[in-house]
Amino acid sequence: MKGVAQMKLGDLVSKEVLSEFGLRRKTDEETPYVSDLRNGMAVTIDLRVQSKRMQETRAGDPFLLLTLYDRTGAIRAIDWHDAEASDRIVEIGTVVRIRGKVTKYEERLQINVDKGAGLSVIPEDKIQPERFIAATKKNVPDLYDRLLSFINGIDNRHIKELLTGVFTKDKNFVERFVLSPAASRIHHAYKGGLLEHTVAVAELCEFIGLKYADSVDKDILISGALLHDIGKVFEYMLGASGIDHTRQGELEGHIAIGLEFVAGYASRIPGFPGDLLMEVKHLILSHHGEMEWGSPVLPKTTEAIVLHMADNLDSKIAQFREIESREHSGNEYEWSNYDRYLNRRILMKNREDI
Image (cartoon, rainbow, N blue to C red; front, side, top):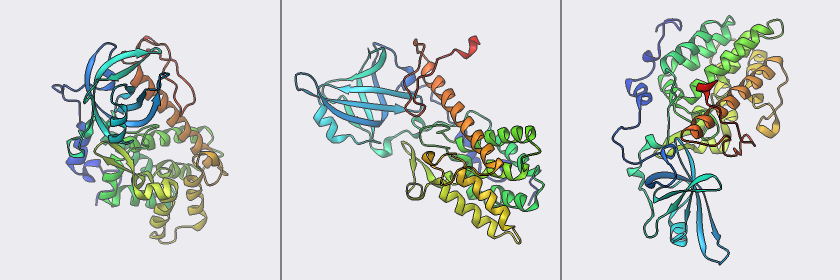
């Protein structure tokens, strides 16, 4: 087998996997995306149901309030006419075809569903996955080269052997890792998102590690950067209508999965020091930073607090970037919609004017 320094992603994954990142919107596709919608448009659009709620007007008439989304954004839809019938056939996660008119309410766009068959459920075998699962815009082979460069820079032979084993020995795993999202909704929620996020966190850790070289073990820190979210490979799956949790992901979560995965690899390396493995595992366990954010333990080493800060910084910037990208197109408003994950609205800057 080629050494890590000479290895390329094409040596590890099939052409079919790499072609997943060539998906582009079809130029002749008639069904619009959320980002295409404008006030006054009559539309037929395929969207996934994020939430639904039956309500009543002041006169006591029922209406169905839906939040729907595709890979470009989310929009509210209201069925004033067939609310009860629509409520019976629609579940959260269902992909539906909406026919209606785009209007503006409280300065936000919404779709008023047409009367009579304005809402229908799309069978799973008719769903177009590319409408709901985006892919990283970055060059995936280049990202993987960057990841391997971090492994090449490791001096500790045990850590280097661990990382080499994880990221180059099992082609099936590497294919899953390359395709995996980093989340289902919040940040890097697209194909290649986990690879993109992992490399970004490693780059931040490298920079901070150089700044505090007398306080940080570079090899331990980089190992944590590359491995902290490795359990997400098994936590998420790409379905026909979006990103979903696997059964293992729902029951165990990526921290527990990643901890077991890394410990299993280390156990196959003769003489892997127990104290070293404990520090690497601590980085996985504590990278969320706070117990209320999902960390079983708080960061208790310098490397752990650096990793948490880098992970949090990249995820927050990604959330801001994705909100700006999603809502800036055709948006005449100065502020974004309120984001419940960030607990705020953000200023919609035109990056071309800065």
